[in-house]
Amino acid sequence: MLFDPDQKAHSRVAWLDEFQATLTLGAPLVLTNLAQIALTTTDVIVLGRLGPEALAAATLGANLYLGLQIFAIGIVTATSPMMAQAFGRRYRVVRDVRRTFRQGLWSAILLSLLAWLVLWHCEQILFLFGQDPQLAAAAQPFVRDLQWGFLPFLGFVVLRSFMSASQRPMWALAITAVAILFNVAVNWILVFGHFGVPALGLRGSGMATSLSNTFLFVATAIVLVTNRKFRRYHLFGRWWRPDWPRLTTLWRIGLPIGATLGFEVTVFNAAVFLMGQFGATAIAAHSIAIQIATASFMVPLGLGQAATVRVGRAYGANDRHGIARAGWTAFALAISFMATMSVTMMVAPHLLIGVFIDAGDPANAAVVRMATTFLFCAAVFQIADGAQVVGAGMLRGLQDTRMPMVYAALGYWGFGMSLSLFFAFYVGLEGLGIWIGLAAGLAIVACMMIARWIRRDRLGLVPGR
Image 1 (cartoon, rainbow, N blue to C red):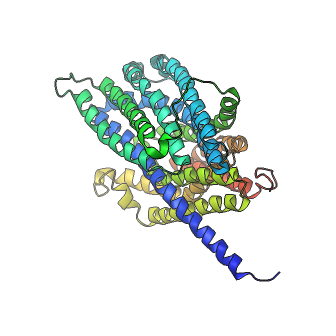
Image 2 (cartoon, rainbow, N blue to C red):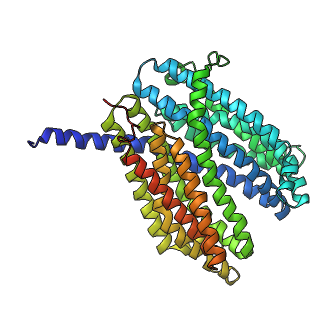
Image 3 (cartoon, rainbow, N blue to C red):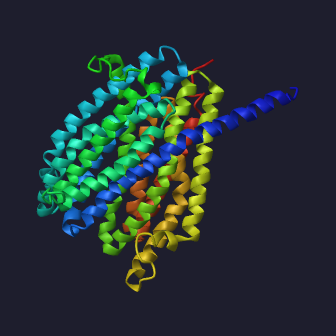
């Protein structure tokens, strides 16, 4: 075969263009994810000033709320690869995008109705889970005010999915940044009582979060209706009209995504309860290490969301080479970042831990030592964590969600939790054993996700030319 320098140069340009496109799309998505963490962190900081009992009650209620919300987010997130495919296909794009968007809103309403039914009985559910009756009773009014933000937040996820699929994510980032300031102000007014408003305590925080979620939805909707580049899609036009085949497709793709996210989140939630078996020091050290790992995770998560859009567009255009470039570019960026974070966690753990507690205080010495050990485990699984979330995003771009769900169930619970229990209790490594199991679970899921991506042609996930 003769060497063709023009073809090689064209290929190099195509990869550089994909690199730039992924960074341009992924950076705002990463920052939006970090901003949403800041939104919830604000609530924790405010509630911490009310005392440990209020914080504990809110944490119990919020965990129940977030468990339902994350599953629901997974379902409506299916709008992203569906709309990205329509953009890539470029045939009847306005009609197809609008119909997918509409069914995303329908799904958000249905999921919210079901969630409200569950959350209204928060106290009874927490009591059934064996939680302190007083804390469960204190959590109920908080959750009943918090739950009304469920629908507007899911609506915001659908709006954000459209912005991402259209490769204009900066609006979502800007609105989320403003929402942080809005949340701080409303928390300050309602929780502590200012400007003539009575101090509502826990209930005030629940109201503030609901109002902030409503702000996210309303502000984003106004942009979509008024902005010239978005207006031509008429997204809210006749939104009440059903499209049953499209709704079925959305749930076929979205239910496995919701389950995949649920398996990952619940295994880490379970790790917190297991860590409680080993005392307050273990819980504190675990909380610090997991917060650092979560902040790091937001970068590959955003790149995985970008991969879904970029792969989905190439999939819609039936561009096999574009699919490969989009997936591997996001993967390379994510692994490069996570490798850097891994080295940082190993080399400078005290610097990272010092953000949360005074690492030089002798009273914190035990927590710092244990957190350093846990952070070393987190450093080991950084690359695997990045690989599994980007791998899932790449496969979602191909609308392949069912087998990744099976991989998540097997990896996180079948292997990860089993190994955590084995090393923590049978071997006697306690908290370290739990982290070894979590790391192993992430590595197994990552290997299965990437292996499926590599075999995408043989599995028939990519349409033939």
